[in-house]
Length: 528
Image 1 (cartoon, one colour):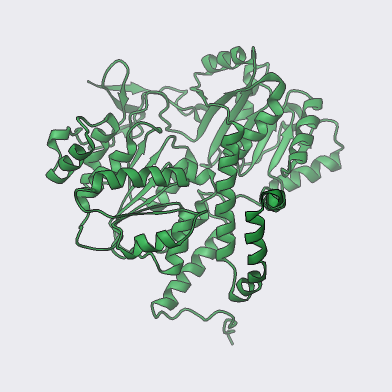
Image 2 (cartoon, rainbow, N blue to C red):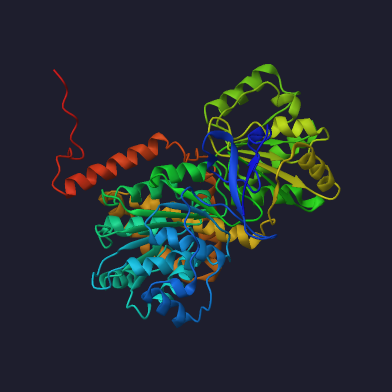
């Protein structure tokens, strides 16, 4: 059954997520969205010129053999809906959460498009973590075993040897994190000349891990012809949609999520936290979210001072803005914010009134406001001018009731996320540090690489001695704290450093291919 709903005046209000609306507006009426009601508990959003779902018995022979080989009796909903678009070669963004069967949704149809006789990378799947790389690789190996498909898994923190061997054998599918994939492209152990399919799996997590510069540099190695690109993400806020615009050509949007269909620029999120551990909960959330810039709102001046002190002691680039500050001190803080030299601003509503900072990516509400209207003013600080926007509330005890009242009053669809554990933070930070260090290693010239060799024996010795692990942990912690004070790169509009690296990469490729790129070290010729 098809239906059309008019979104009304609240559709774009504050960038609220709208449930059960099609992403593409109805032709002739920009205030309407379309969707398809599948059942009482399911809701599907389809692209324009939608394709019907496919059943397992309707699959091509090679794909039917693959499903039979792993014992699949039926396709999961995301697979039945996604596979027709992949087979048709249409770029598409798919909203799908972990555990929905999304890996099979892109691996299975990729098998049909591969040429097993061509010993080259024909499908590249980029993922945010080594765990996901291993999981996708296992599923690709299981599904492609009967077809003779070879797979390589590339991620950091492990030896290069097995990865070299997998690529030398002519892997048809390459699964990897952007940083390690870029390493192999630079080493020329991986080539993408025969690439046909590019997949971004968990694109939102890849951006939060800081992989955007690596992803853009990988893009310079893609063939200069049309390749099919598919993007899977749990959410599609503005920064993910910005990534899609840079890598995809007029993609469709498909979602089977009954909870959150994001069609605007601001996500409204809340975490239920222990009342006595709000400060530690905030730091964990910041580690996972990894905002490029943020305002953290508190209800009182004393809370502002406390939260600001906690963040500074933890190593974050933070400062406070309260009514107690003298005018010259306030101006200095605001100048740092506007110039991008301050990442986290902790403030009361009174202090933040009247200031306009368009590039704020996140708003944290350490204390939910007593006045519902204040929530609107706070959350409205983010998601401006097409930028990514996330409004996050920390609630404890009775504060949940306050947030529910705000949600009902303004018809805001709020998403609850589980509070990250300490192990979650350790895993994410470790993987982020590996990605940052590998990127830094790639930037070293020959002389610095030679100089660095004197410390290789010491590094091996420290790694083998458990009692010396504190030294290594201290060095890694110091390095990571330095990165917290660097300006995060915007995935929607690349910073100058990203653009420079892209230009250098293109220039390097031009020289490798016999182009007329200028040699390094030689100054540009001056005009007379």
